[in-house]
Image (cartoon, rainbow, N blue to C red; front, side, top):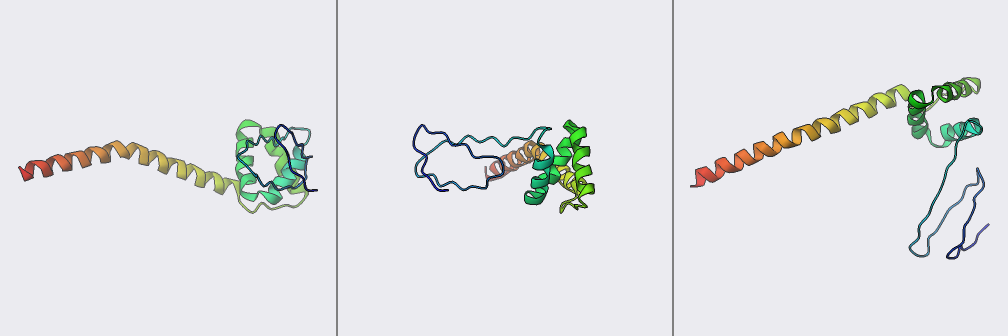
Length: 128
């Protein structure tokens, strides 16, 4: 199907329908990708196939916030003999390391700024 959505119109795209959008003017789009315990199996199986890295990050968050769903996801993987492309444990370690690195950079910024200011002051004193 192809159509032009006019100002003030709303479009509903059914679950599972692939689609593309070309905006002809400035626009605001509101989307809702919905997952609940009721449709979790279907959403998980699509995500693990189509969004491989996101699925690894998602299962890590499910472990924290919804362990029952994380266990279901692992059960679906085992049932289907599905091996995830990205190991969730390795993805978590990498993401944790990135976060620590970013934090260490933020902590060092004031120290580096102080060192730069001290160097500038020394240079100014030497020039006088």
